Image 1 (tube, rainbow, N blue to C red):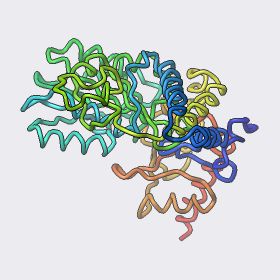
Image 2: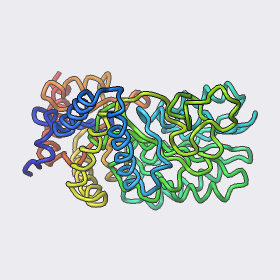
Image 3: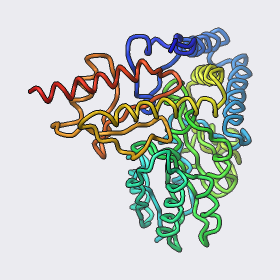
Length: 403
């Protein structure tokens, strides 16, 4: 398969076979140039002059409008953040919990949000229940069956006092997709109507998300993974009730409707839209970089076309790995997303696999808990790279057998 112009625009992909999109995606040169150009514009205008504010305002509005189009929601329901973790935590900590309320967290969540929930529970004397979905391994072939099982588990583990459900759209370890819209409907029918917090680190710009953001109370994503954007910039979409009921937790001048009169006894000093969860000075040039990447990504096809390509690539990799002796795939059939997790039997540590492959510029990663190997494919992956990874794994296993 020939390289696309999109791929040619990424220096990080010219000298290696890269399978770590779920950790951080490469930044296109065009996006890097957009960041640099924006910085230069700000310096020419003066970083703190009356001339610069219209430019900054336009950058913010233009970027939020683009994200709103991708998420199919109103721009006012979007708040800029630095990353997924801050996008989850800032609105979460302001939700109106009462002592004894229950938090339901899946057993496939990222350590950052789990730690935040545990600390929140400690401070406010809440209880935590764990939703056991890590053993769902059907893959793409029986996705409908997986959805039914998830909904059944939701019904089983919801309590009368459950106030929050925390669940990733795509599980970062197994790669399974969760039926967020169906779960949202279930929660709205529940007596306590729990909030739904969705970690969208692995879903934004990998799978279609229109309709999903509308159904989640908190849907937090980042630009630096599947969107090929710069690190340090993410966003979160917020439901109307979160905007009405959650108080700002990390407060700065951006959260305020107006800086003047702050000493006056104003009971509603904060913005009523997503800005109530924005804090203070942030890196404006990153907005231009993210927009550039999103536009280039869209030129590769719409979200459905790109996702179809990702699934074709992941299916090819899964099938080839399934033929290798001593490789144990986590899913029982080809994955529903671009995430493929596996282990290799008979070795001391999975880390030695990463080190071995890295010597040939083949890059995958080790998950910490559980200790699985993870390879991610994206629209810039090609079948030659997949074959190179498969050959590298075959050579590694052979080297162990000959010792």
